[in-house]
Image (tube, rainbow, N blue to C red):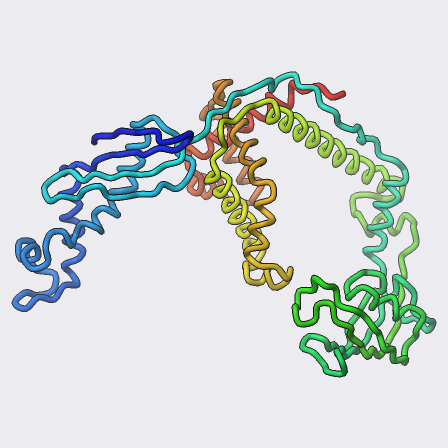
Length: 427
């Protein structure tokens, strides 16, 4: 293989490489043997067409494209390695020559990883507010949330108040004409929850079961249904029932209902305090880590961040997000419908700080390289076990899903983050 790389501009260049006939000819034979099974030529049974007859009738060149498709990935990867460059975006491949009997010459316009000039990243001084102390009010608030989770809705004969739930039928219309999606029967609506259009729930407060209320609202200008955005509407709403929350008494019995591991309310409060302290400690450590990494990135200089890297980061983040929701049973189409957004909206959302995320990744990688961090076999096994526990998957399944190079990269990154964070000094 002949390989050369020519820099065209900062972080951009052209990689030229060849694919040898020693590799091309066996691949042409493989492609022909696969292709001939479907070729019908008079005088020959399917699958028994001789190669010379194929070459004479169709030309050997008819095999080139499939052979190139099969050979190119490995050839390109080998060329990148031999050239000693780090490519950070999809290349633009072009065929320079594919002469019969000659080595094929391929060119690839590539984007290379930009140079990172590291500044200080150890012993950084960061400002992080210490909010690790847990107050009695926070414990009580946690207890009240859990207590309300066990609340039951009971019929109320009085007028509806904020916090009550009303069971209603409603029919919406604009200028006297009903619109799609504006009708509901026996709908349970918690007043004050903000579930409906602003102003809707407020107008049901003070009314009781059996009343019909003409609720007058204006759809927001940015309402997802464009034909209704900014328009005045009337919802004729009939209240069937008014229900109020009935919460259990705050006593030892409640404590046992909320957590079978405790016997008293005081024990439950103590447990909640420990959990809140652990959460705050974790949040504090995360804040220190984020502040230290941000300062390390600010101290570094990146020579001309390529736009292609930022675009790759946007698509990576989008694919990760969509993959996460699909694992929860939500398709992209369902997500866009539920949220009233589009693929373009999601792209813009992840585009907002993509350059910052890209710079951060580059700086942390550069620190890992500068420190000479490498993953040992023990590190890799521990990482696989951690991921298996985290996702509830068998170890071997995790091992089959992740390449060793990916694991080594992630472990080195974690070590770099650790050296930034562990040496940071908090004001």
